[in-house]
Length: 178
Image 1 (cartoon, rainbow, N blue to C red):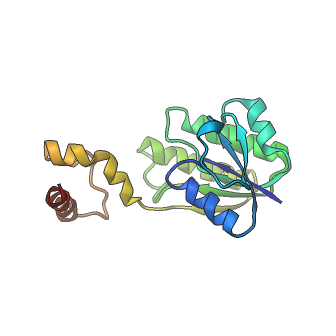
Image 2 (spheres, rainbow, N blue to C red):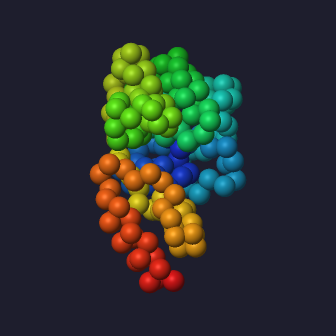
C-alpha cells in the first residue's frame, strides 16, 4: 500500500515522511520541485502541483492512503477541493488531514474556514478519515522573531488560550538570547 504525502517538504510534512519510512511504509510525495526534496532514498518523488491535474492524478496512481497538508495560500480551499476529488476518483480509501484547532468554530478566520470546509468535505465524501487539529506550532514564532525584537510588538492577535503575559515572556526570552 502506498501512502501519498502532500505537503511533505515543510516543517510538519518532513517529519511525517520520516516517521512513515521508519515504519517501513511505502511513501510517495508530491512536490513542486523534485530537486529540492530532501527525503530518504526509499521515498518516491513525484514532481507537480495540486492545481496541475495531470501531475496530481499521476501522484495518486496506486495510492490507498493520503496525508493532506495543503499550503496556506489564497487558493488553499481550491487545493483541498481538487486534492480530495482526485483522491476519490483514484480510489483512495483513507485520508489523514492536517486541519487546525477550532476549525468548526472560528470560521471568521479564512484559514480556519478553509480547514472547516475540507473537514466537511471529508465527511460528505465518506472517506475513512483522521482529522488532526493541532493548536499551534511554536517554531512558527521564529518567523516573526525580528518583528517582536525590533518593533516590540507581537504581530498576531493572541489566541484565546494564550495569555498576553506568555507572549511578553517569549519576547523577553528572545531579547536575552540576542
